[in-house]
Structures are given as structure tokens and as C-alpha cells.
Amino acid sequence: MYRLALNMLFGDRAKLAMLLCGLAFSALLMAQQTSVFFGIMSWTYTPVYNIRAPIWVSDPMVEQANDAKPMRDTDLYRVRSVDGVAWAAPLHTSFLQARMQDGNFKLITMVGIDADTFAGAPAVLSQGLIEDLRLPNTVIVDEWGAQLMGRVTKGPDGKDVVIPLKVGDTFEVNDLEARIVGICKVRRAFTGGPFVYTTYDRTKLYTLGARRTLSFMLVEPQAGVDPDKLCARIEADTGLKAWTSDTVIWTWSDRSLARNTFWWFWKNTGIPFSFGTAVALGLFVGIAVSGQTFYSFVLENLKYFAAIKAMGAGMGVIARMLLIQALTAGLLGFGLGVGMAQAIGRAMIEKGMPPFIMFPQIFWATLALVLGISLVSAIIGIIKVSRVDAATVFRG
Amino acid sequence: MSTHAAQPVAVRTHGVDMFFGDGETKVTALKQADFEANRGELIMLVGPSGCGKTTLLSVIAGTLTPQTGTVEVFGQRLDGLSQEELTTFRRKHLGFVFQSFNLIPTLSVLENVMVPLLIQGASHDVAVTKARAMLEKVGLKGREYGQPNALSGGQQQRVAIARALVHEPSLLICDEPTSALDKDTGAQIMQMVRDLSRSPERCVVVVTHDHRIFRFADRIAEMEDGRIRRVVEDASLLDTNQL
Ligand SMILES: Nc1ncnc2c1ncn2[C@@H]1O[C@H](COP(=O)(O)OP(=O)(O)OP(=O)(O)O)[C@@H](O)[C@H]1O
Ligand SMILES: [Mg+2]
Image (cartoon, rainbow over all chains, first blue to last red; front, top):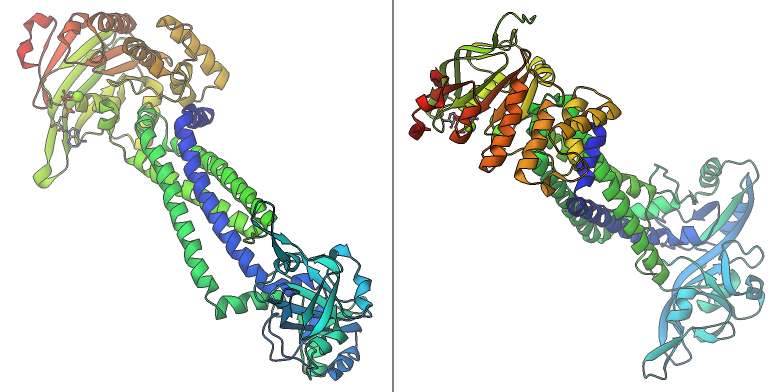
């Protein structure tokens, strides 16, 4: 009987296609909208993602990763002397204006890393060498920046062509030359411009001798030392704030810089609201469309189920038939929808815009929603069949 | 509960009242309906529209439970059975032929005929074998894997009959089985149904408006206002203008 239930579902290709389209469309909408939302939200903690260090230390007033409240350089020594710290390296971040060769200004996010350890350096360079950062007046620019700050010329067909920055090109920051020795691949940030890496010491020059340039300290615990416990010790000993660098925003962890950044933006900006409406709309349309398509499928088959019931099938059998149909359709629709969402997401990642992150949670939540919708439609169908009048069987 | 071959009565209703709704909208469909059908008999139920034919059929089939009266089918009392027990009863003893065939369009002809067997818990293979044999009997060999909608009305009704009989039910219930068919096809179908009724283990009840098929009946029960007015053996005794 259950085999027949599936054959009933697959028997009418046109209707099945409609049903799957409806379910797939809603799964796509739900997964797509939430993934883009979380993609954009994940840009907020890009610094934690790009600058890989087990522990971050900041001024106690700092609330999130894009928020720099510079500390004194001497704080570095205090952190280094905390029991369990293997090493601590300085990090500078600031938003500055870069003056291009053609005189245009571009906003950049300057990152100063420790020249001895290169702690916080970008993981992947597509051009150049990280060591060249030790040469005078040198910087490493990210790929997005290389494009953004590139020279615009007219191509042979009269259209604008961007010639991206490459190793050897120069620009100026506060009238100081910055010579590119590398192009790196890093994730984009939500705020500020492209990342321009230089050494920590040189940032004092580029920022025209700012009194304090120590935005963060990157700390490596000694072997066997628990990062969470070390954070607590650093805070107790120095009065500074210490963060872990795990980028899991879901689990409850007060020390995760990524998580705090994510939720800081959630609470303090309009992004969740403006985007949330789009997500909610996606969810709503998705639920409505898939519920409606499956429900109409159930309605169309109602009289056949009524006949099967008259012929002596118990409600248990009928309920299971409807559930099998619903869950099969739901799973197929979900697979198609999420597959499409992934494909679109991939294509968007290739282009770099907008970001797309399908957390496993989004995957499972979409699955749960689509199956939930199918289940509810099936249950409504089951109730309808259980109430169906004998007269309808004979009237057809 | 036991079946006595000696007892000639297959179906008996006594003092059956059936009404729908209540208060202002209360409709009485059956009023003290007394009906009897014998074993090995093909009996027809006729009467004007709304007189309660389908309702009586539903009561006999155990798909409707009357408010009062007794219903007995092959020695089994249906009144007082729970919904579950009625379902089991239908599964074991009943075959249905509906006016609108009610074939499932998304299943093949063969699968449609398999349904009653599968409901009874037969294995897929057994159901395939039996359904195939039954389709051959109704002259549809070679059409097993087609869709019902690709068949003519007469062929569809034959599929419906194959489905109604594949599990060898004792009581075959037909509501307007020929109304969608032309004269010749209707006669063909009725001949088949009549042949099937010729067994002491069987009984066929047919509701119809179609006077062209009256000749296939052993007896005809005429209904009026929710009760059996009279039972005749010869259709010519009926006032056909009233039907
Ligand atoms: N489920 C129901 N709810 C309310 N009233 C009903 C229901 N089923 C039947 N009736 C009413 O009961 C009466 C008998 O109906 P029934 O269907 O048994 O008539 P019938 O003799 O089969 O008519 P027809 O020849 O038109 O098929 C009618 O007045 C009908 O409106
Ligand atoms: Mg009727």
C-alpha cells in the first residue's frame, strides 16, 4: 500500500512538478534569504576570521571586533608577564584614507601586525611574500582592495576597465608612500574599506604618530593552557578584556569575540530588522506557497482516499500513506530548493557579493520547516479524510 | 456471527431511521426502512431522486451508521459495531462499484485493482498475480500498465468491477454503475455482475435509475420517501415514469 502511495505521488508528473516547484521554491527562499543574512552578519566579525589568534586582548570598554579603543604599548608587557602566556603580539587597526596615483581618495582599513612574529598576517597571499613587509614603506593589499583601488582606463571598446593594483604599485597614506609587496586573500569586512596590512611599528607613521596605536593584542597560550582559563587570568591580572577567537556564534560563549561582535551588530544596528523583514517575508511566502501546494495535492486526492477508506482501509494506513507522500515530497522539494540555493550562493561567492553562508543550522531549520509544512498539510489531509462523508464516496 | 448457508437472507435492515443534521436543517433520509436481499441474488434499488437509495446502500455497506434499527449482512450485525470494526467488516466482505468509478488516475490499471488486496494485507506479489487474473476475467488483458484515464468509460467501469471483485467479497454494492455508459456497454457490465451474483456466498445490490438494465435484476425494490414501498420481480410492474 505504501508503495502505491508513492506511485500515487509520482504518477502525475505535471502535478508532481508543480508540487516540487512550490516546495523547492519555498525552501530556496528560506535558505537563500537566511544564508545571505547570516553571510552579511558574519562580515561583522571578519577581523576575528582573518586575523587568526587564539586569544585577543583589548581595552575593557571594547564591545566588539570593529571597535578599537587603543591601549598603551606598556600593556603588552603586562600581558606577556601573565602566567601561561607563550607570546603576545601587538595589533593595530584603523580606518584611513589612501591617496591613489590619480589623486583619488579611498577608505582603507589599515592593519598593523607585529614584524617579528607576523602574528595576524593573512593566511593566503596570491602575490608577493609576507617577509617583504619588513622592507621600508611596504604594505600588502587584499584582492578586493586591489580591484577597488585599481586604475580605471578606457578599454578598446570604450568601456571602463579596471587595472587592479599589483606588486610594485604605490599609493599614499597621510603623505607617506605605501609600496605594495603582496596581494592577499582575506574575507571582506562589514565596516570600513579593504584591508591594507603593514607592520605595527609603521602604523605609527601612517597614523601621523597617534599616541596610542595598540588596538588589540594577540596572545598565544603556552602548550596545555586552556584559552578560557587564560582569558580569565589575563583579565584578573591586567584589568584588560580577553576574548577567545572561536567563530561559533550559536553556542553560548561570553568570551567569543566573534559571537559578541555578531550580537552587538544584531542589537545596535538596523541590519537584523531591515534584513529580518526580508527573511520573515521569505519564510512567510515559503510557508504559504509550500503549504498551499501540498494542501491542494491532498485535496485533489481526497476523494480517492475516501474511496480507499470505504473499501476498508483503516485510518492508520491512510494516515501513513499521506505522511509518506508528504515527507517524500517535502524531502525532494527541500533537496531541490537547498541545492538551488547552494548553486546560487556559490555563484554569488564567485562574484564576492553578497556574502552567502549556509550554516548547518540554516540547512536543518529549512529542512525542519519544509517537512513541518508538509507534515501539517498531511495532518490536515488526514483529518479531512477521517471526516469524509460516506455519501461523498458514492457521489464521487 | 456465523454464516448459515441454510438461511437464504444475505442482507436485512429492519426499522432503520437515518437523518442528517438537526433542528431546522434536519433531513430524514431513511424512515423505518425494511429491506431484504437474498443469497445468490441481484437486487436493484430504484426510486425518485432523494428518496434515500444511496443512504440505504451506505447503511448496508457500513459506511453510515443509522440512528435506529438493525442491519445484518451475512449473519453479522452491523449496528453497534465500532468504526474500526466496520472498517474491518468492509475490508473483508465488501466490494464497491461507484458511479464515477473512483479509479485513482495516478496509478496504473493493475495497481488500482491491487488496492483491496493490499488493504487486506496481501503481499505485493500476490496482489499483482490476483489482480492480473481478475483483469483477464473482465477482458482487460494487456491494459494492466496503462493509466485508467486512457480507457473508455466501459473499460474503466470494468476496471472498477475487477477492483470490486478481486478480493472475492460476499456483498457487492453498486451505485449507478451504468449511468456513465452507453446501452451496450451497460448491458455487458450488468451481465458480468449478474453472473457473479450466482453463488450462495454472494449478493449484489445495485442502485440505479437506468431502466435499460432492470431486466438483469432478480427483484427490484422500489423506494419512496426513505422507505421501501414495494418489491417486484418484474420491472414492467414499476411505474417507470416516477423513477
Ligand atoms: N451527508 C448528508 N447530509 C445531509 N443530507 C443528506 C446527506 N446525504 C443525503 N442527504 C439527504 O438525504 C436524502 C436522501 O439522499 P440519498 O442520497 O440517499 O438519495 P438518493 O435516492 O440516492 O438520490 P439520487 O437518486 O439523487 O442519488 C436527500 O434528501 C439528501 O439531500
Ligand atoms: Mg444516490
